[in-house]
Each structure stands twice: as C-alpha cells, then as structure tokens.
Amino acid sequence: DAGITQSPRYKITETGRQVTLMCHQTWSHSYMFWYRQDLGHGLRLIYYSAAADITDKGEVPDGYVVSRSKTENFPLTLESATRSQTSVYFCASSEMGAADEQFFGPGTRLTVL
Amino acid sequence: SQQGEEDPQALSIQEGENATMNCSYKTSINNLQWYRQNSGRGLVHLILIRSNEREKHSGRLRVTLDTSKKSSSLLITASRAADTASYFCATAGGLYNFNKFYFGSGTKLNVKP
Image (cartoon, rainbow over all chains, first blue to last red; front, side, top):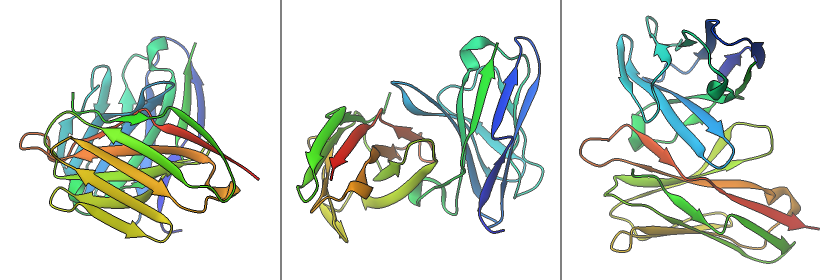
C-alpha cells in the first residue's frame, strides 16, 4: 500500500528499556521527520533526515537515536526510555523538505511506565 | 524558538459560520503551512504560503501572511461539522533552520451542527 506507515501503533514499555519505533514510506521522498506530540506543546521536531545516511537534530533530540540506511525507512530508537518520553510520535515525509508539504503517518502512542 | 503560536486555543461556532484562526511566529521564515488534525489521527496538510505571498486560497480556505507582523491567519468559510478538528500552523525556513518545522500548539475548532 502506498503511503507512510508507523509501527507499532501502541506500545507500553518500562523505564530503562530500549524501544524502536518504525516508519516506512513508499513515495521515495528524500526527507523524513520524527515529531512528538504532547498536550499543550503541539508537535516538536526530534530528528529529521534529508537523505539516506544524512540526519540532523531537531528541537528535542536528547534521549533519541535515529538512522536511515534506506530511503524508505527511518526508525527512531529510545535507548533508555524515561517517563517523560511518554507521548504520541509522528513520522512524516516530504519530497523537498521544508519547501514542501509533509505527509504524516498515523502515529505511535508510547507509554513509559 | 521559532515556534508559531495559534490564537484562539479553542473556537466553537455553528455550522455555516466562518472560522478564523491566527498564528504568530518569531523569526524569519521561508514559508508557513497550515495542517489539520482530526482526533487521534495524523496531521493533514491544508495549504502552504511562501514568504513572498500575501494571500492564498484553496476551496473554502483563505490564508493570509503578514511578514512584517510575523503573523498569519486561516479563514474557513461556511464551516461544516466535518471541519471539527485541531488546526496547526507550521513555520519553516530561516537561514540556519531551513528544513526544521516548528509547530504551534494549535486551535481546537468545534463546529456545531
């Protein structure tokens, strides 16, 4: 199916565990983004990638790691989850980065106990 | 922070009325975009207005941009119950932040049938 997908859609984990959220897009868009959405904060950019093997920090990168070995995938890893990372995580892709519209995935609701 | 801020935070209107939402931002931008988010869903792109444009239309949507005041407005005319959603502005650009989007905290619109 064409589009952008995220998995899992829901995840409950414990403090200190490593968690990886997956994002896959079928458009071959160059740019991909990870955001977190918390009540009262809108969306905040965690990391973005301009192409395979090119990533850069966003507004709130601490505690997160990303990689992009293939254009279509952009996994986000929480190396040691904390309660403050409880949030809804959205992945997005764009052909021309900020000069273009972004297409968002359905989100992953992560709860860290 | 370049973050946009929407105003009002919440808006409740009757079907058929117009809805106006405002967005203010802090630094220079390349473009400003508006997104809609239905409850529990990902964001959907509505319209993009570039820094050298003052007004843009798309169907029932009208967006204005005043770079001297660092503000934008989104007007939805003849609103429908299906327009009930949260609306976010997103700013992008600036010399050192070109591919970084900054989202405001959103306006929650409720259109009563």
